[in-house]
Length: 103
Image: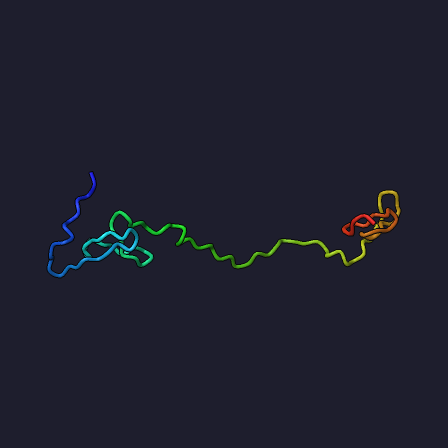
């Protein structure tokens, strides 16, 4: 059963007529509630603030990696299992050119 409203055209000392700022219905000012966004609304239009508005990400002090490999500017040295020298990345004896497409 819906809530029965007071008569809005009756004088109540210390109270005045006001409009709900969402639906526009006339209420007594004491029947309106201030919502989280600052609007004065009737009980039917009142809604709580969403909990995700209060979510805060945790602070990360430092995100260091435990190890890294060389940046590739150093020439790769060594030999393969047959004793042949290993060519540098980006070309060489194998004719592979990584990253520049097919020419």
